[in-house]
Length: 252
Image 1 (spheres, rainbow, N blue to C red):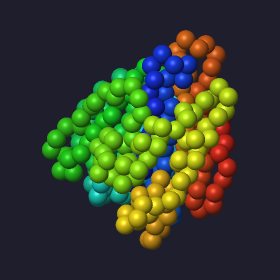
Image 2 (cartoon, helix red, strand yellow):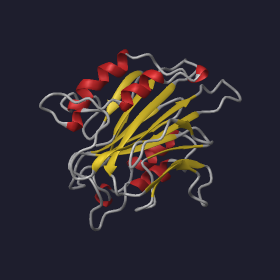
Image 3 (cartoon, rainbow, N blue to C red):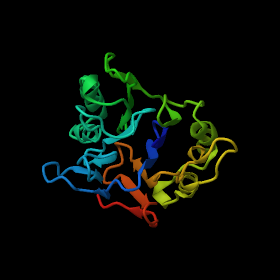
Image 4 (cartoon, helix red, strand yellow):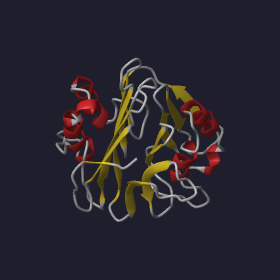
């Protein structure tokens, strides 16, 4: 159950900030965000070495894309394509709205269910593929200003212990300030491994469960406003498994 939190604030110098934790099997090989695809040199994203796609990335046009499994859909399935390829397809676009419209028209039978966020400094879109049979089309929804969280269910779904605990904490926390390199509040929340009584490890923002399923890494991205000529996005990464690393800026 990956988890993504976003802060959208139109008119701000940094109108979009995202943070995400990737939860996956520890033995699934992956590489940190970089320019891994020679045929897609404009994309900076984490590489899933098993399927060749990604879970989170940014392109040189300032489009961000992230994909999360829906409940009960962890891992590949025979006859269906890797959801990680959708991140790369989204990042082939120079505009988040264009990307979101294009991906909303995919054949839902070709993929296991997912949530997908596609955003830039103007718009944020949620693609909701919630029907495991694939008989319903992928839903496209635009998101408004403020803080939002999503994991394996619907947006801001407080039936999920993690979202019930952490959405109000992110909303109350000091917002990241990329201009002064102050990410402390979100860093602390993304790293929090305290659990809720009776709910188990998945009520924590970062966890390690029996069977080798755990939070493998965290990312944060901030996009500057369009009128801030010369200001680059900020992309940060930290690995948790198999061994922790410190937060570091990803080369863009």
